[in-house]
Image (cartoon, rainbow, N blue to C red; front, side):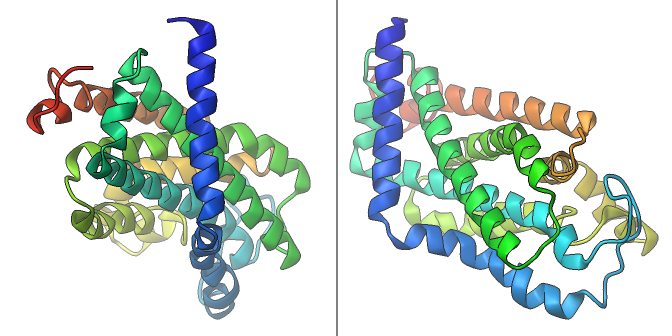
Length: 270
């Protein structure tokens, strides 16, 4: 693979995704409405209901608003990853995806370019949310913003790769609502995004606690939580990296015209 052609392809795909994002003026606002509602409205009501014990990475008691910030950052990454999945389905229906995959570059690399472009947008939106959270005096150390960058990139790529994998199997735009109900919301609510997992175990919800511990989104949130306080959750980072590799490999296999989605839909090899 020619390095110059590869960089040009990455630039072209990224520029298209950024330009599309800029044209869709309400996309940033819609991405931030959900986490801001939890931060400003729901947290105000729940802060006296949920008590957060002193558990790593925290060294003292923290307000509920502070606890949910990593989970809300994960929400931004998760929903943008699924938005990328929706865009892939739309591009496939419009024929843009077939045109992209016939470019004289490996298909896995073209998908990787799409993944990087989507992750760039996800991370930018996550930092916009952090800026807004700081305006509400949520106590996240500024140094953690730098520590969190590589973790946000890794988590964003993992969730974006999951979106790529889902786009293989979601055949029509109309089916995306089902994906929201059966993939996105269970991943979000079966995680420590809004409440610590020890509370599930303490309350006797052992099945839900078990499912949450096997949820990749759980480990994305925990990796971000530790990074915001200058610490590394090596187990969570390893699981997120492993899920990224698995999701992307399966997505690349699904877009292979000899075996995956394109063969089933009658596509021809590029």
